[in-house]
Length: 303
Image (cartoon, rainbow, N blue to C red; front, side):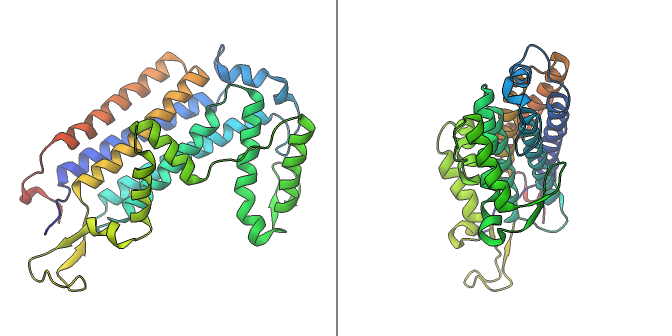
């Protein structure tokens, strides 16, 4: 059975929708986090809190550094959105990798969401510390004495940095939290965006990314020449139209959800927020129209 692939018109619409939103969202994130936040705003209040005047493992201004980590997670997510478009537009058939790219983008947006949510300076520092400890766990497990470059200072081993983080939390009277795993970040975000079955959808995306046989079957394009052998020349991978559109929707809606949080927390100027919202509306409308439309004639499909 042949799969229903993307048409050339589909490819243009998906690419335009994702690139337009990624570009507008990067501009928004830079306007919010790359500059002094608007006042009044939750972000401005956090920066005025006493916890932003103490020195920690990141040096001075820990609240500012925590917000920078939101920005870095956002940049990673936007990069995945652009990679998704590159895979869609590639003259080579890049199919199963769409799941891997979408998964990485959702995880990065989930991380940004978890870090931008706190409205308490204490909680934000605790979450920032939790992520730092989490980020160090495999380095410590495999290369505990590996030399890392401390922010603005001398090199330090991974084990020493972890000890510094825990020591700072103790001296500040803060709790040591456990950060979610990438699976947790993505599942929680998808639960919010899809309103149900977020964990299930993430599991399905991951099973494709891992190359599990039942999962990748959805990408098999079996031609008429020989339908009996999956190893024959009659079988190849293709891009299922429904899956490509579905994952584009996941990326776009996760992106939009997190940018809304950033607009609220940083009280982004109305002109910047409105410019972004125009791109968001256009992107989601394009993808929704694709999802609702019928499969195009065979002659207009990608090979």
